[in-house]
Structures are given as structure tokens and as C-alpha cells.
Image 1 (spheres, rainbow, N blue to C red):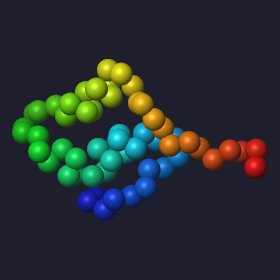
Image 2 (image 1 turned 30 degrees about the vertical axis):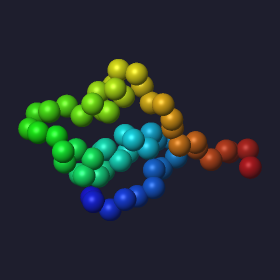
Image 3 (image 1 turned 90 degrees about the vertical axis):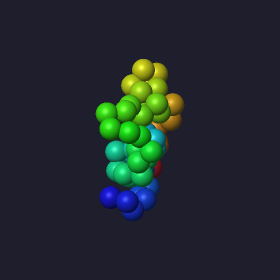
Length: 56
């Protein structure tokens, strides 16, 4: 899925891109961890796309 898609509500933009865009990890060698993904596993998500309000 090389096509760039918008991040769905409730998802982290970085996690979404790294899961659906092969270019995100192309620079890594075999069995090499992505520093950005490791940081997410340790520190959590810095930002999530807000879900639409059910009040409106």
C-alpha cells in the first residue's frame, strides 16, 4: 500500500503511516528496529486524530 491515505479518527498518524506505507521502513536493514516505532512502544502516542463528536 504505497498510496498515502488520511489517518482515520482515533488513530495515531505515525502508527498509521508506518503500518500502511512500506516506504516508512525502507531505510532499515533486516531485523533492524525502527527508532520511531520503538519510541512509540516506550512512550506512547503523542497525538491521536480526534473522533467526531456524537453530540452534534
